[in-house]
Amino acid sequence: TDPLDDPESYYKALWQHEELPSAMKFLLKVNNTMLGRLVLGPWLSCIGFFIDDARQVAAGDKTVGKAWLLHAIGLVVV
Image (cartoon, rainbow, N blue to C red; front, side, top):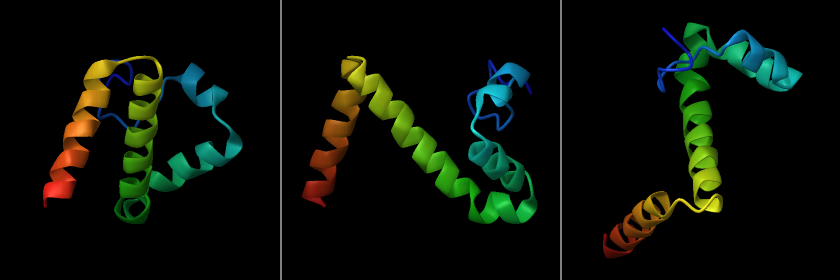
């Protein structure tokens, strides 16, 4: 798995890993266990997804903002 080309990879390039805070390194280490993947993995994935989308919207990506707007409208309808 190439951590730079595979968006679903849990791996980080060495330089990316070294820049992470100690707490995040610990969370990733725990996430590499079976129990961690089952309990912690979904939380890390969702939080990372929301942070990434928020950064894209803040940077002016209208496509991501539109997707979230349409999602919110769909939630109201349901």
